[in-house]
Length: 152
Ligand SMILES: [Zn+2]
Image 1 (cartoon, helix red, strand yellow):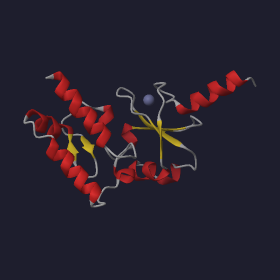
Image 2 (cartoon, helix red, strand yellow):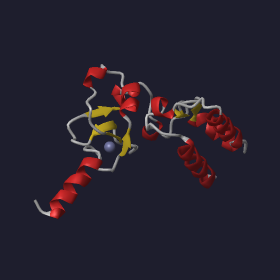
Image 3 (cartoon, protein in one colour):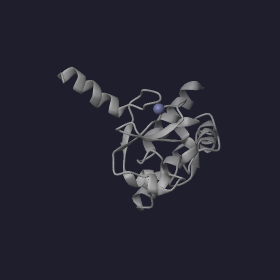
């Protein structure tokens, strides 16, 4: 096999089989926490998270043999429905997109960030079990706040 083909194969394994966008690796614990299906389905392979808005796939395996979609997940995934107000963006401390839109309108968004930072400081966060992406929400929230502010 040529090096070029090998490179293509390894790239393909990182991309969502449905939308073709590269997914981020998530811990097996995150997949287990998030599935609304029997965990007998979970295999000891690497899972990736697809954050593409219009793609229903949430997790896929690097061997592309298994997909879990939004219907298989216990939480609504904010990346898949960023226009909704009642979907969470901070899953540990239960902050919704609507709440953040409202706080930004009142120039009070710092209170949300302070609440999350205080929760992290108190070691009350559990992003790997609560957040479908398996990692901290703060980067998403900063981007979301900037997006709202840039639209004003
Ligand atoms: Zn996808």
